[in-house]
Length: 246
Image (cartoon, rainbow, N blue to C red; front, side, top):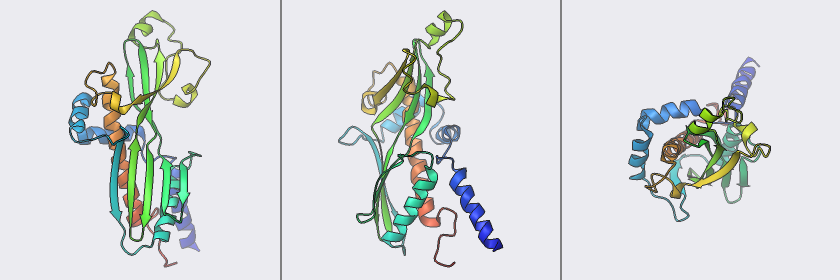
């Protein structure tokens, strides 16, 4: 009985402790700086030399992961468990769940991966990668795709606007993006979608290159984290004891 309660506690910790995300944005930034450096323009240019956009002009990563000894059904259940536990706060996280074909598609939103105060506007960038898991006996294929940056543009909150407006009314508090998104009460707030292919470093001339540089590096770093977390769950389970010996 004691063992049961210990295992239940661990499961609940893993389920709720993830808090609807695989990593906090601050930790993601630290990870990105360690891997690619803290000069975002240079890091983005270096990554661009290694990356290719797909036929839809999206940034896509794909990886096959092996899991010998596990059946398609076993892996299917495990991957459903991982997605549900990890993205519990996102009601529309799973967009396709087909056991027969062995396919799971889900969204993996992370907010505020890049923020920048420009001359006129203040930008806050979020992304919603679409992740597809194809499952067969003993292996899975993970595809991670991002086509757009989701940008909250706070017009007039840039350097010029901040100088002209003493009370700073309407400035975007990056720590509370949900309040600002789709807020029709403030005409200075605009929800925009920036196509990755049309921004730096894939397009050399970009007036928003500082913002898009960090956005690309953080998007790339997030792909690494997603892939690593899925592989960890695939090989070792969610709480480390998912087996038939119980």
